[in-house]
Image (cartoon, rainbow, N blue to C red; front, side):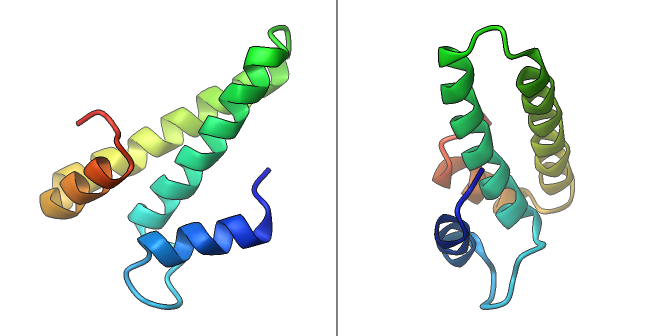
Length: 88
């Protein structure tokens, strides 16, 4: 789970404007951080299938946001993919 300070920092770094919390870029960045944390958890707790299911849902949600950006805003898509070092 992301702490409020970490979440605010991520929003500030990737947001388009000051009060931006819902843009695809912010959502992708937040999901990426949650995915990283959950992946680390699952390396320790290999049999935690409930968390694994949540992880798969987050990955699918992030992919949906990425597809939306790729289709409608290619420049923003390539910028966020490069910034977060995600596969293009």
